[in-house]
Length: 355
Image 1 (tube, rainbow, N blue to C red):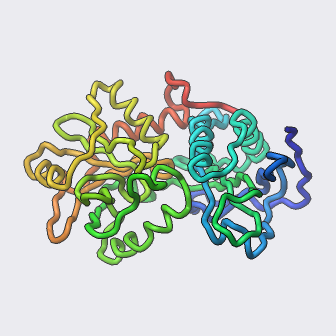
Image 2: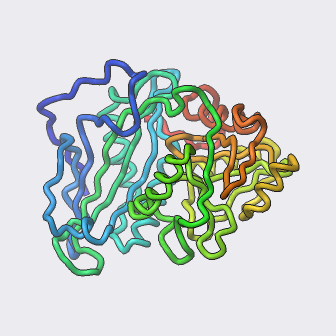
Image 3: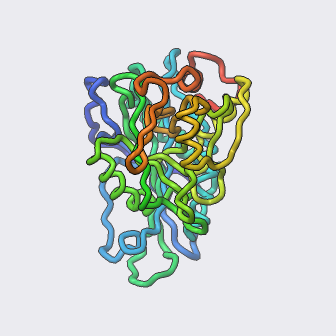
């Protein structure tokens, strides 16, 4: 399949003040789009001016939520070049999500090259300030107009780009976590490991409850026993417990995070033993009180690493350290990973792809 580059007749002004960039509010001049039809396959791949879609009111994505997306970033490195972080992993996960949601897979090599081409064309939109980046959102939606519960026969696959600011405006500060004992994020056999919109919609009610109580994020427990830690907000979660890095296992209910993979690899290189097992609520509170649990943090593309200062479950709260200072190991992981992404240190892993 060829990739057509359509002309751009009118350009948007670039952000004047990169310090005022917020996440996902501003978008670049162009986007990538290709279409799918059963019997024909993917076709009409093009990079075109950013514009709204015209969707039939019966488009199946609007009724049955057949949709997937990804999130990755392009970084302006210290030498002025632009690089992507582990993009092939995102494209591979995109196809795993497509299979689970009964959607057509993409040609991974072609899709990756299309993403790179789009970012290269829009390179002037990659911000230069400390901590900023260009967020990349590949998405697939079911567009067939049909009111019937079955996999659609028509799809759009597209990619949009958004210049985003530094996530931590006030520095890398620990957050307060509320543990929900009622709402759950995902169950075994469900779609918890897929980046599909329904998972995020299902999390909004509990997130709003947490915010109303004065907390920054919700920590999700397993759906069966409501006892074991799974994710925090929309992030994977890690604990420094007995000097080991402990994180929930991948068994179909949590996302196989690219940042999670990177953090686990770096931790091993730093000499830490890594355990992939589910910690219970009792272990979290007993460990925090005894000093066996010293640090905790979330991992994700948007935040990289988000330190946790306290947990509240029902009427009980435990604080890690003083609750206000980022743990030494958490900070080391954050610094090491962002140094690799921004080109401040060599990348021995082959994670970075320079355009």
